[in-house]
Amino acid sequence: MSDQAGDTKLEVKQASKEVKESENVAEKYSAMTVSKNSEMNMGELSSSFSAVPTHKPVKKQIQFVEEKQEFNKFPTKTGRRSLSRSISQSSTDSYSSAASYTDSSDDETSPRDRTQVNSKGSSDFCVKNIKQAEFGRREIEIAEQDMSALISLRKRAQSEKPLAGAKIVGCTHITAQTAVLIETLVALGAQCRWTACNIYSTQNEVAAALSEAGVAVFAWKGESEDDFWWCIDRCVNTEGWQPNMILDDGGDLTHWMYKKYPNVFKKIRGIVEESVTGVHRLYQLSKAGKLCVPAMNVNDSVTKQKFDNLYCCRESILDGLKRTTDVMFGGKQVVVCGYGEVGKGCCAALKALGAIVYVTEIDPICALQACMDGFRVVKLNEIIRQVDVIITCTGNKNVVTRDQLDRMKNGSIVCNMGHSNTEIDVASLRTPELTWERVRSQVDHVIWPDGRRIILLAEGRLLNLSCSTVPTFVLSITATTQALALIELYNAPEGRYKQDVYLLPKKMDEYVASLHLATFEAHLTELTDEQAKYLGLNKNGPFKPNYYRY
Image (cartoon, rainbow, N blue to C red):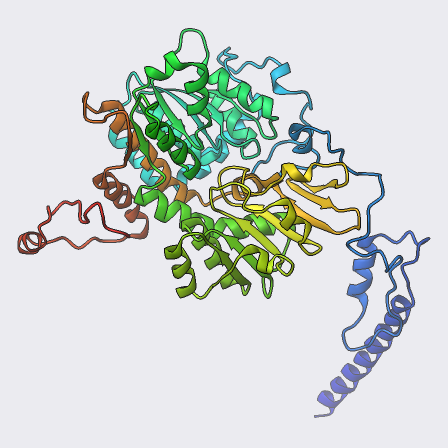
């Protein structure tokens, strides 16, 4: 017992000594202030906080200089970005976004001004830096691991070469996931030339890896508008190579070829389009009687509409906003313009994190869906002064106007989840009275004369692919759908498809879905002969009529 008592006294004495030392430390650090002349950096400040014991209150409060310098203080001229600067310049002001791991020490000269050669001696490409090919190859290999269905399709059809003789010109986002699709098309026998459908979404290292592998890629992150059209032209107009298939995302490639190379366009065997914007433009051509080739509307296929548009955006909207603004969504007031599949995904994600979500809609059916899902349907003008975040996803133009931007509260975030940069009237913001300040890659403060500002992401372009990444597995579904659509159009007997826009056959939609079920170890129930007869179905599908709404 005496030994235990002695140990207890020793522990109490030691504890008393530690408390006294802690009090001395607290006295030392609580007396420190951060003044204008202080050379104490934030790292030292952080260590100072960690030294203060939690049980002892700090006697003097840390003081920060210029406490009156609020967020909306009008900035000095230093560091402002001139409005006359091109999109190409503004997109490279800061470090690369998480969507691309480009070395910031790269030569700042335009890739158009440099001749690069891959290891095979070819210079038929134009990318940021061909030396990044090895890094890009690793990115592609990572993507392949979560795109098992597309890889499975590649292995099944590789021996048959269903795209032998196909010369595919593509205009899509150039990411690791797209690279898996492109290399699948090559493995199935196609020759490919590729460019980007968005000036911000290209992963430079992936473009380099594809170029090293022999695919003629013309794209880099941060292209100017002139670069964008130059790249498209280089893909289409090259000596000794004439495309016979188009894979488009947004319709820019299709319209460029239709306008500038009509004779080449007439020889195209099929077009595959995957965006709302591009499909709308195809239907316009068809209605005017100017669509002289068959086209496949992949965007409205079930496997694209219900998976890529909904589930992909449900996850990537949060990713893009978090990476660019570090915003906390709990309690924020957010308005989502459009309650299609993209809008549904965005609303579901934001609601789950505690945001107060409003919806704007023109369609009474979609509006009723939003109401039944617990969202208040409003006109944008009714809430423009109170919302913290505006997200557009309609496929329309001027959804958010200059007048509405003028009335937004200080610090509001404005972004777009639609394909085109037409939804937010960004052009109206490029006026002398407004100051643009680049604060992060793809993040601009647009500042009004009174110091009020909004936070504009990706200059109104597609948020998720411009500012972050998208889930690989969902892109596998879309990519497999695109590959099957190309195979179908290329191999279709003459006369099966007229000069019109078609939906993907339902049997193909079901096949794409079945390829992805293995990932979840899902086991489908099979119809008995009696059940199939009762429903009037083939036991092997399709299992739903074309008019069925999933």
